[in-house]
Length: 101
Image (cartoon, rainbow, N blue to C red):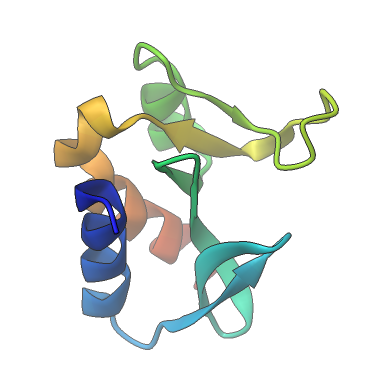
């Protein structure tokens, strides 16, 4: 297990009322049955909106999440490289608040 994967699990498990699950065959955490973070290609993925979405997508190497690999990205989901793992907890909290409303 990579350091990034360990950090993803730590962040997900520390957030209140979350459950580990799967999203398109990828590991994710859900709240109230709704996915809000995932882990793909050793990067963390967040369901975001507004300023947090723009901030995450503006990071070098960040991209819209395309789990199928068929150029059909999910517009609310941003995949953030491990170079920005220091921001992952903040994005995860924002995603939790967005989905958990």
